[in-house]
Length: 286
Image (cartoon, rainbow, N blue to C red; front, side, top):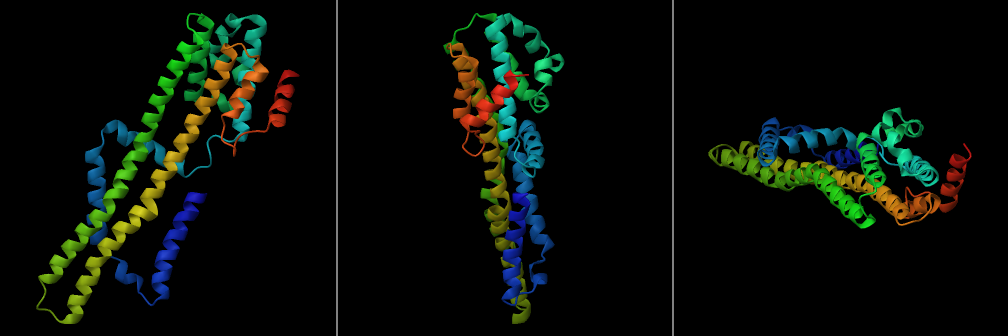
């Protein structure tokens, strides 16, 4: 898991380098500084967000430590599913899809693609627009406009955790300064103490600035950036579905419609033309 590896490198480089220059890790152990910075960060995070934002962030965090949710294999399954559905509609009419879109869990077509079926949001997006296509009351332009609005709403909701984390990352250095200032105030109140004691108090105060900056740019900010990338991947799969369905609505055959969908994918997950064509031929031969 790259995120864990990255955090280990950050931790090891910073603290390992400190030890290599002769520093003592015990000097950095300042639980009160951690309490001030961490407590202020958590408090501001709670104050700046509502219950929905807090739940969305808590739900997102475990996903950041997992592998990619949408990979080439899943995209191949998605395009095979869309190909089968659109081929059935082309041969038997759109009404042939009604039972499949009304109850995808019981559909033999959807059941053949368990990874897609396990993603409730993805299945809902597909079935909702197939249902509109079955009704035949909306033009391709109207469906495209509705798709764009839904994708925009989804992206806005998905961006909430990233925005919340980025706000915390921006605030952490300032909270580190607050902790350092409080430490300096405490040190100055002991100005009559020997230089060794006074120096120890000032060094402890400086740990606050160090911790604030380290937590912000070494840990929280990377989490926000990783959340942004996950969100972009999630939006891309909806754009793939949108492009495929609209191509079909505009009269292109299923095999060409899924090719339209393939072209909008990121190059790292996009199957080649031959891979998709071979996969479609395999599905067609079942």
